[in-house]
Image (cartoon, rainbow over all chains, first blue to last red; front, side, top):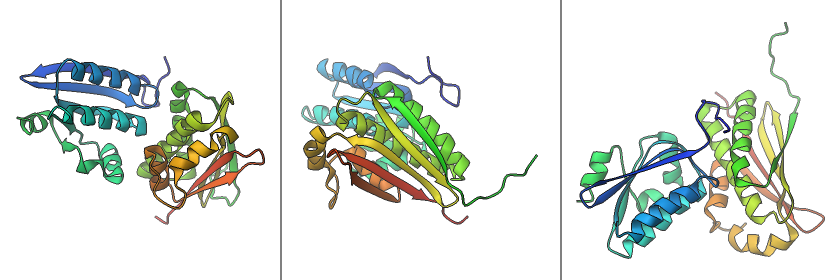
Length: 122
Length: 142
């Protein structure tokens, strides 16, 4: 498997857990044109199964591109059709900058930790 | 051993990757190394890496049947210029121009990011009717 300069794999790890009626999707790695289909599949299955309150934890995401953003936007559109919401957890300034310059800070709730993001969905 | 010295010369790195999503990260890491050698800050390097990765992704989308994406990276004391050859194929030009909006905000998020992160972005028509993308970032005085 290719390695990044930092020695981590060029892959994405996706873990899903539930906290009451909120599904928490933990991502680790890089969300790009290659890996975002996997993220899209996981989020799509959650929504298909009736999970409309999502926290997507980007704390361990080193990189996200427009295809990754597109997956998050697509998920948000789908849950909103059911009265749901998506909150993001992201304290990495480089990643937050991407949300800032694309204006996505206006449509996603972005929090520094999972607890705050979870609480805002209650 | 000679000490490193600032030079007005332009160093050119040509990079060719397969037109496949799994190789975009290879271009991103390579351009990060070139940008670092050019002398950009960490934040600027991250901006350049994202812009080039977005350009590769767009080239995969709009580049037609060409098997590879070719990047020409020109590094100098003044900054870095990256040309994506065959960015848009002649057959995809109309489709590209519908989202590119050269005189307005692009509706495509990837193209929007490229313009936001780089100092200058140009489209150059190729003789065959396609488009090359040229993007550059200047070195700012410390």
